[in-house]
Amino acid sequence: MRPLAFALALLLPLAAGAQTADLVSPNAFRVCADPANLPLSGKDKPGFENEIAALLGQELGRPLEVTWFPMGPGFIRRTLRAGLCDVVIGYAQGDELVQNTNHYYTSVYVLVTRSDDPLATVETLSDPALQGHRIGVVAGTPPASHLAHNGLIGLAKPYPLIVDRRVLDPAGEMLADLEAGKIDGALLWGPIGGPLAKGNPALKVIPLLRETASPRLFYRITMGVRPSDQDWKRELNSLIRRNQDRIDAILTEAGVPLVDDLGTALKEVP
Image (cartoon, rainbow, N blue to C red; front, side):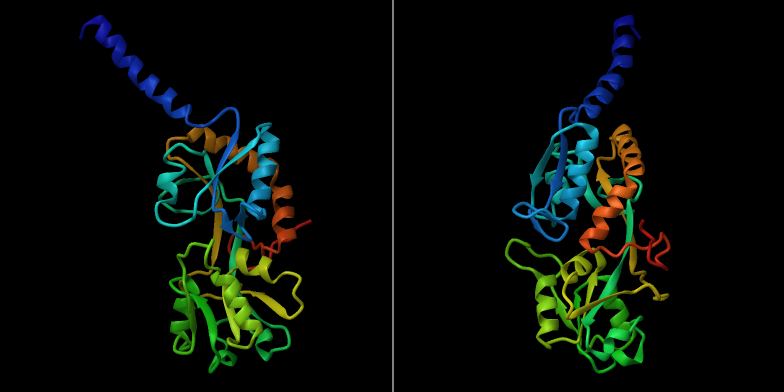
């Protein structure tokens, strides 16, 4: 190989690496978020993920810039992978569309009941007390499998999973149906059900910590970055570690049920 060609061959990988690293903005904390996904994120009214993003941007000393795009098919491809932003604040650990940071909280599905209902003492979906009752569940989510396994799916009321939250609000509709007596219980992901029911004395939120059957009902939540952004992932991991107590405080204030990493007990938050 000629000297010039050899030198170019050495420089090309370095140039490619520099180009990849440049995707992460040094001037702003760029976040992808759904504009109508409360209580997690919202454009007109901030959710707890917005608050966490603001905290991390402040700690980085960079202004927060949000790319708003409805969560659903194509979200990652058209935002994070398109280079419009550098991080998704909430992403389940193990999802292959992104590279996960270390998880910054673990939560669990909840059963929401009316406070004065006998079902308010239920702790597992195998409890015989649930037989003959109509339970609301988001179609295709893990609790739906538990309802089927326990013979409860026949009376269950399904709510859609993938919707444009600017138009439809399945979780809000489910809780409204619960208060109106149209269903007897509502199965929701804890970071949605907990905050939506917080402060409503008519509703009781029961974290499903005692479920042992598959599929599991607890999940670790990370931040999602591009697979190429290794240094950025490490920077975010350090940022999460240094600010974990403050992140926990935001989540707790929002009403998110925080659990230990094994999903067996509520996390003790100072």
